Length: 138
Image 1 (cartoon, rainbow, N blue to C red):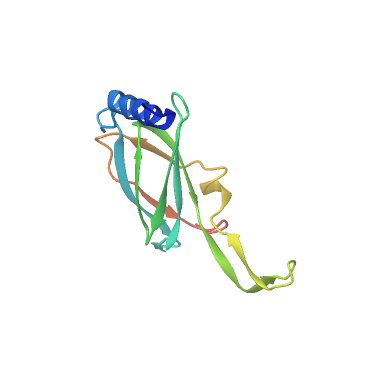
Image 2: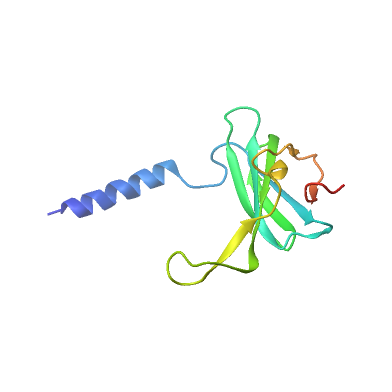
């Protein structure tokens, strides 16, 4: 006699086998590797986001480590957003009774929430190098 759990496991296995999980299913994805510099030095850590400007407006994100990133996305024109945070030396929040270090988002909004950075993802596009500077500097 088959239990409901056995039938459920069989059904899940059958559906998984039919749908498959190979990387050839779905649209072709492109891997983009590039660099991010803050004030001329590799950005120690942060996050980069590609937002599709054409089509469905899909969003792709990846970590930045030691100034480098690799992100996988569909091809197309992307709005690029870069964020990073750091602790503020000597600043603590005491609202919960314990001193907790306070951080700040230090990359200007013109590189994230109000970004004008754009990158075209395709097989012919050169690796991007984003050189970011603080507001007020050129």
